[in-house]
Image (cartoon, rainbow, N blue to C red; front, side):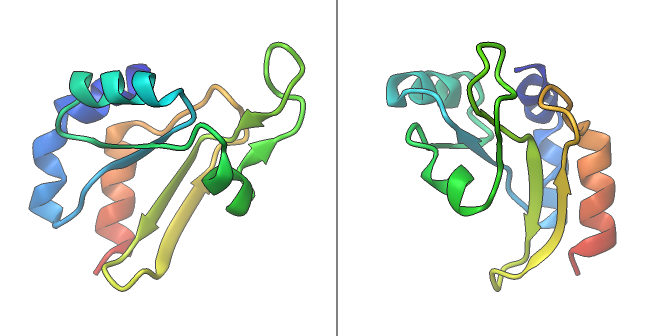
Length: 111
């Protein structure tokens, strides 16, 4: 969850680029609501059933500590027309991009 702390700290940098941060959470709805309360400048979407993750092909089979499937940490930049401009899919389940890396990608790929 450290990546959410880092994104929350940098929340002022996103509106300057006319962007918003959406976080897809596979937690239970109550937990996702708590996450939203803890990080008020981020938009938290609850996806407990992993529908969005499955639809987007963001599941890593057998990568969870218990041997189950895990969501692949992914950053997707979508422009205002709904076009995917950039996608980063982590090679490791525990790896995340830093806010600086996300901001650089926005500067390069979102007109």
